[in-house]
Image 1 (cartoon, helix red, strand yellow):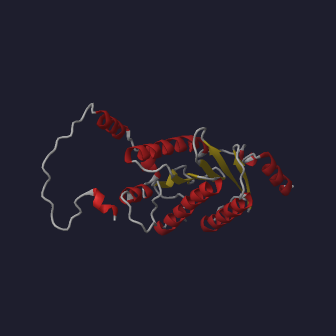
Image 2 (tube, chains in turn orange, brown):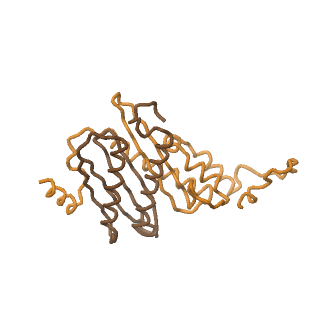
Image 3 (cartoon, one colour):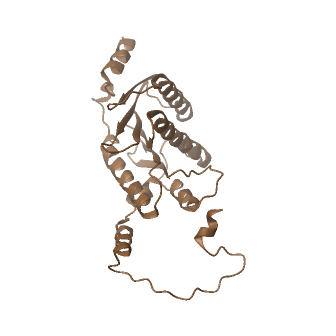
Amino acid sequence: MQKVMAMQLELEGTFEPMDFHKRQPLADKRNAIHKRMERWIRLQQFVFGLPDDYSYAVCLTENHAGTQQSFGLVKVGYMNWFGTGAGADRQHALAVALLNTVEAISSNSTSVFFHRVGKIFGWKTKRVARPMAPVEGGEIRERSLMAG
Amino acid sequence: MEILGSIQGENMEIAERERMQRLMRDFISHLQGLRSWEESRIAYKVHFSKALFGSKVDSLVEFRVGGKEAWYARANGPDPWRAFCRAMGSLKQMVTEMEMRGSLNAKGDGDAA
């Protein structure tokens, strides 16, 4: 009987028919999580000029008291945590990979977005050339030097 | 424990279907050994789609454990197999990180992360 059910599942392409009668508190959050994660990733790609490759994974758990806990991992671009190359955006990619899901979906990047738009069109901020502060010896002077 | 699942593609051929099923079953069995779920049945879903004017394939991998625990992964890639591998890679890396932080066997009893 179970084999027949499994075959029907494969043929019909349905998902979890046995769980329809159960309570699914975590299922309600599914769409919201995906929507906000993808919006956040698109914004990171736009603001930092990262390639369009991305991946993320989320684990939601609920204990007996009903408290929910989430774990997450986000990767944007080709960079990952265990990579051996040192790219220009490695620091950023590392920070993104270590982000918590709660932080990722709750981060409000609207101000970053409008700041970027304002910079492109020159509406708000005009950059003023200032003399550079003296740099200590041995420090990395510019971001481009971090490219390795 | 019984592991059922479906692999779906929107208007695309999926070549490595059996390999994906085997990887999903192995991953869920491995996770069941680590977290010791009491569920007898776990269903998973792997879904592939493509944006209208996009060149990349989006993959979505998800499974739930009795309404108490849910795992989701999403990635993109030039073809379904690579998109699937990226999503699975993220899932495995997250399990590794949870193992390193010692929160894998906590079963969500601690405070919210």
